[in-house]
Image (cartoon, rainbow, N blue to C red; front, side):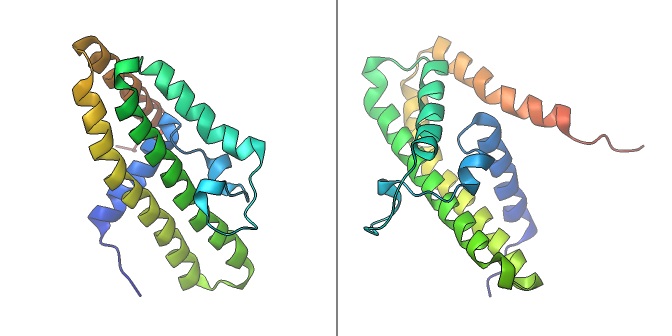
Length: 166
C-alpha cells in the first residue's frame, strides 16, 4: 500500500482544482466511459465524439485564449499532446474506480482516489516543463495574457471557497 504525505496530496488536489478551473480536465470528461485511440492500445477501445471533442475543444479554446502564434505551434503541440495524455490517464483511473465501485471497501475507495490524485500530479509533472517552454517563447503581452487566463481559475476557486468562521 502506498501512502501519500499531506503536502504532496494537497499539491495534487490543488493541481486538480487548477486543471478543472482552466478547463484542462473536466469532471464530465473524467467520468466518461470512453477512451480515445491515443489513450489505449486495446483494439476494442472506442471513442465517442463527445469525449474526444471535449478535450479537443478545451485545447482549442486555450489555444485561442493564449493567443498562440504559428511560430509557437511546435511548443503548443507538445502542451496539447500532454494535455490529451493527462486526460487519458485521469480518465483511466476514474474508469477503474467506477468499474470497481460496487466491491470496494473503505480502504479501496481511498486508494482509488489516491490513484486519481497521482494521475493528476504525474500529469502536471509532464505539463509544467512543456508549458514553461511555450511560456518562455511568448511575448511580454502574451505572458501577461497567459497570467490573466491562469489567474481567472484561481480567482473562481477563491470566490467559491467556504468562508472560515472567525
